Image (cartoon, rainbow, N blue to C red; front, side, top):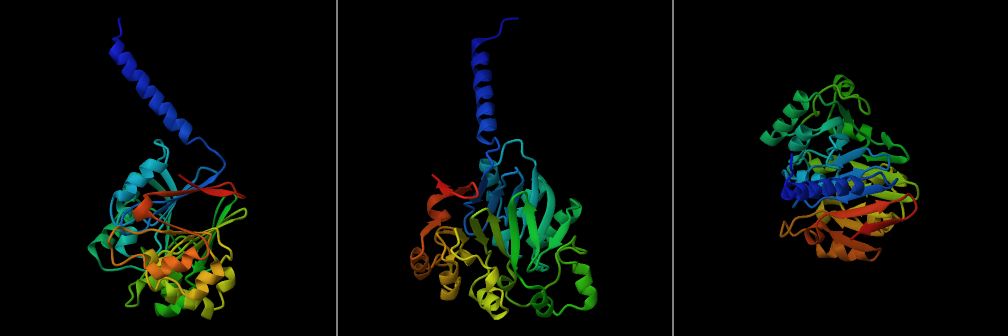
Length: 309
């Protein structure tokens, strides 16, 4: 049978494309942190040195799938952990599509819910997919080989008191283990107060992920004596609350002294980031924004790190 040259060339291009795709994502022993450009919202993808994958928040909509498509191997079908820092749509809106598209090992979050239709859809998807849930509080750790992630906030006693939980409700949460019920309890308090602070450490490299946990959270961290858990001379900071005016106290900035501050933000949204906030951060290092540069990828080998251009 004679094979047309046209089809042969087409097949060769397909083969070369697949080979390039495979080679691009061969294990390199490095940690890749990708701050996704999802508009006005947060989504951070972590490709661990051991080839495990973690997604922290999912942005407001399906744009997060584009980021995953750009930065995960085409054959990747599992995310070991999906984390939701707190239940606001600009952080969880895209997670429904992610949960349907990928196999999820664990869903980690804080024990809160809200009454919106989009959040009910997230809850139903977690139930339908039978995805186990873990609630995190200060001291709970996640490990991926040599990469360790420590939960700095929220503190468990403060969490229990703030939600006015009964002993029975506390046992339902089973913090740090598999959650006993779907996504916790409602509150009239500002949801940003409950936002996860996650400190990732890989060798000499420190990353702090903060969701929307702005200055009131930082004041509570100092008030409860938890500031020693914060990394000093931080390599990379995911700036809280899209760089808002109330995003950080001077004490927090001068304590962490980030060499690189990343602001996940959309264009022309709510005055974010605040110019004064950007100026303060630039005193310690570089500031990058997803609304100006698109996806921002940081590559780390445990000692050295750089921003991929």
